[in-house]
Length: 398
Image (cartoon, rainbow, N blue to C red):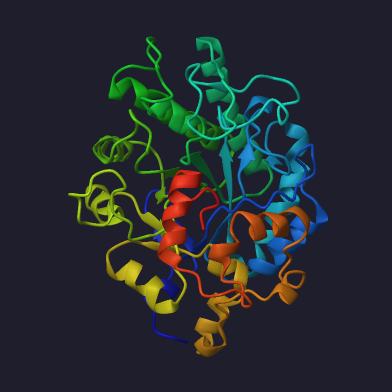
């Protein structure tokens, strides 16, 4: 077997859970679920093709309540009736000991009335996102805020009962949890808004509620992760200094890892050009050894994954590369790196399980970054920066 740090197992200190290696498949939007949020056979086939190598596989995001649905073809964890559907997904991922992590969220203002079947999108405040075709949301009442927090706990319970090994709370990519943290989308004057401390209250309440569900329903150790975007381009918006204060505080919460959503794992600040250190490095310095970090963003080769660990980051996540090459880990383990695919053939999409709306999505929004073999060479760095601008830090985690 090749001698790489990323092939070594890792044990989460707080929970005593060991994953077989440090490679993670991050959450990637695939839009393959039924319209009601149940898993489809095509979706299960995709996961079965791509699992088995990485230590952890984080699913495409699942919404925690009906108001939280962000797009068509999205997974649902909004009701107990979805537990059998989620169980089939967890079972598919568990091949060869890969840990199955369900990502959960509410889209907040980043959705549309058409997706919500006529309902107005909700957010921390009635502030429209600065994105094309965005719709004005209504502000959640205090009672609705409390209920949404409970909904995250209930979704965590369903993940436990479905046989997942953990959940990842999606606090990134400008969705509802980030909307509460952001001074752009949160103009509230109650305890959920205003000061930086108040704007942290909602995400931390969600974490606490998820842990309550774990304590009540899990009969074995269960991983609790959190994903965030380090900056916003909106003015006012989340600054990197805000994020570092958030990171300092989240260390006191019962999370097992932090996952930073960016299109380039070595990205520096989008807003402050005086920052000359990659954001992940600074975040890791603040985390210390208390909480492991997942680095994601255009990691392709074994050397690039190893560099992530050499810099002190505990996990390397392969997004786009895992789509092109489901056997990436196995080929590294078998000293067959020359056989790793770094381009995507148009003729391979069915064999890779890239069906229907997922294939259409990749070939429209993501084609420049998928390195399609018949296309001209793409400047990876330009695409990665575009991801940050379009999707607030890499919507699909690739």
